Length: 366
Ligand SMILES: [Zn+2]
Ligand SMILES: [Zn+2]
Image (cartoon, rainbow, N blue to C red):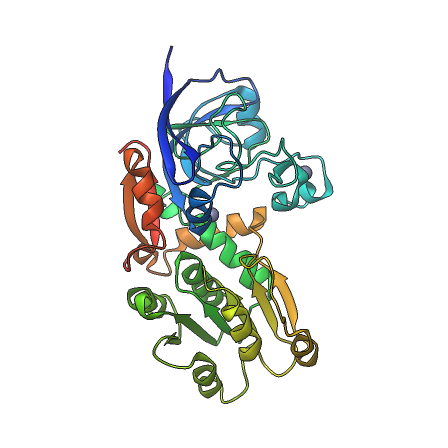
């Protein structure tokens, strides 16, 4: 019987290589031959501290080729065998109100925290047959309710693997925080996420983009400039609040986006400070579980709107793929590193590790 090679997270920072049987493909399902699994900060966090004890094939930013598919799957999804596709990590119910809006991120069926039967590539227990629920593997199983986006011709698999941070950039900055023509924006953190926000804001017409980073982000801040940042600030070298004040002539910015990792409450406080006098929008991550002495009065006085960063909707993915295909920005500056499946452990640890790393691609066939 044919077997599929996978890298399985079996505990904190532990990877085992395991073979699962090649699944039978029903009329409404398909088999994806993996090309690239992108790795992001969430992988770093959940590899070190798994949110569930079950064995999990990680990998939730997945690009591959439709290898085999049932006729119903092809008809419903409008794809053909041999097509390169991006598979959203949400495997939604397609029945609820959110699904009908393309908001699969909000569907109960994809909520692995609340719903033990929730399906999400890279998060779902490998105990569920047919087991292939993650991209750190040579093949992935696509059921009837997998969400696929055709990758435009001319976009390489490796470039396409940046689609998730780019979709988040479009979702968070443009849809959720309404960045548009003449907007002024502070982006904290020049990782793949912050850089994708930079591109989205630039493309949307922002007139001022400030990107902050730390001393070890020198190379990334350089890339931020090449991708459209007007100013970059090394927060270890200068006081960022004073620098933003000077750059904006004391006006502050319309929108502050937090794309940092492991910085605690500092970016939220800086965001509140940097926003304009009234009516700014602050995008927060769910990194800190609690925020002692949260300055509620400051939020109220400045009439700040707070938005939460929470994945992306269907349309953001389509726009992100179009952005990648447009060739308008030197996005190959983001795809810095690639690793084979046998180096899964090193690949995850490389993200957020050494200085030059921005986006890491795991190549399951290398
Ligand atoms: Zn991710
Ligand atoms: Zn749903």
